[in-house]
Amino acid sequence: MVALKDVMYLMFHPNQLRSIVQWKVWHEPVHTRDPSKEPATLRSCFDLLNLTSRSFATVIQELQPEMLVPIALFYLVLRALDTIEDDMTLSTKTKEPMLREFSKYMKMDGWTFNGSGPDEKDRDVLIHFDDVIAELKKIDKKYYDVIEDITIKMGNGMADYALNAEFQEGVETVAQYEEYCHYVAGLVGEGLTHIFVRGNTANPALLDRMELTESMGQFLQKTNIIRDVHEDFKDKRRFWPKEVWSKYVDKWEDMFDPKYRTQAVYCSSELVLNALKHADECLFYMAGIKEQSVFNFVAIPQSMAIATLELVFQNPKIFHSHIKISKGDACHLMMQSTQNLRVVCDTFRIYARRIARKNDPRDPHYLDISVACGKIEQFIETLFPTQDAKMLKAAQEAQGQKDADQSDFWEALMLVAAVVFVLLFVSGLMLGLAWYMGARFDVLWDKEAAASLKDAAKATATSLAHEEL
Image (cartoon, rainbow, N blue to C red; front, side, top):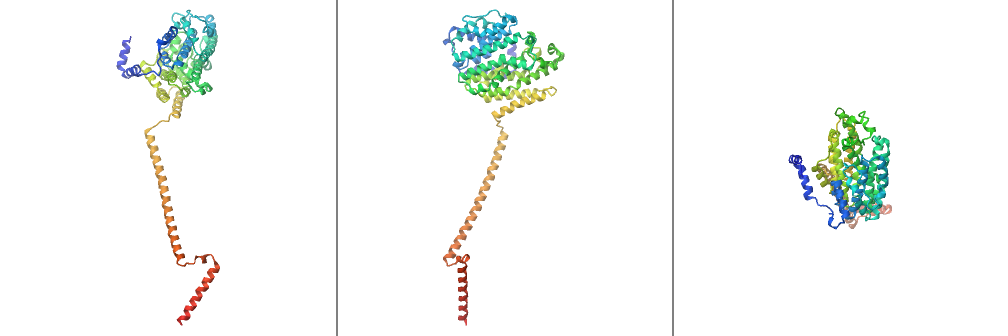
């Protein structure tokens, strides 16, 4: 049921309402799932998917048939791992072996777990995990092997952090922060890339550029960590690295004290800057996707992430409440992200410019953030050069002038050639007539002929003189 406050909000934000209506009415999925042809266990899996994340569930269920089930099950397996890791009611003694052995549970018919805390929102995934296991046994081995491999890597990584005494107090360094993001998100991207390539929906060259895959996961996870800082603080968890926040406050709790709000915002700016460095590689990765439904699946979360970064940037609300992009904005982003790479690039450009406009000159990271936003625009420009009307007109005029100059040159050259030809023709004609009439041109180069002609001329002159006498 729609809340009254949502109705009031939409009344005063008609553009938001329009985006929601456009998505609901005019969005046409590339592929549509048919539940009537699915066994009960698979329908149960999709029910769990809808419970865990409605936005991800919608995009997953629009994937092409071959990708649909493997990716849905992959998501549920990782969601189960994440639920165990996040459950603060489970002791490390219980949690650590479960994380390390989870790949084995995937092969145990009927395995479930109902020991999660009552407040764990995704506990149902573990309670009904037997349905996930039943469907995992049916998928192609080339996909199962990827899911198993990533589950082992992620489970061991999460277990290591669960045992790390320093991590229990929070992340210490930026390197540790990025390593954590790798285990919980970078590995997800690695697994998805292998599934895409094996399903012939992505360029195999992506397997040689795993740093692009890593950036996809890092960008999403870092954005979520920045946004959820207050929620994590209430749960007594800290993912912001001490190496960063200790530059601004003495104690972690001070970040949430209103009198340190300016310092806290500057701290968040440094983490936003850290996340922005992945944006261009995310766009580069998306250029390697060959199938539309897979492109939609990849592009929507990335567009949401850049929009969320813009929302949390220079926003003190993240330290006393949980904020997220509006439903209208989410629908607009989904409409934009289900078209093509060019439109997604335009979305990144728009939000990069918004971040640049919100940038505060008093922020110690002002210049670095401005440069980071500029690099995003510069990268997009290399992919899709801007077609500016004024620039195009100027280029056309310059080309026209160049063509005119070239035309004038050739016309002048032809005119000179014509004049030379006429002169040569007339000269040749005159010389030919002279020769025909008896002109002796050989005297010009023959000395004997010239001498005889000269003697003949003298003789003629002498004869004429005597005749006169």
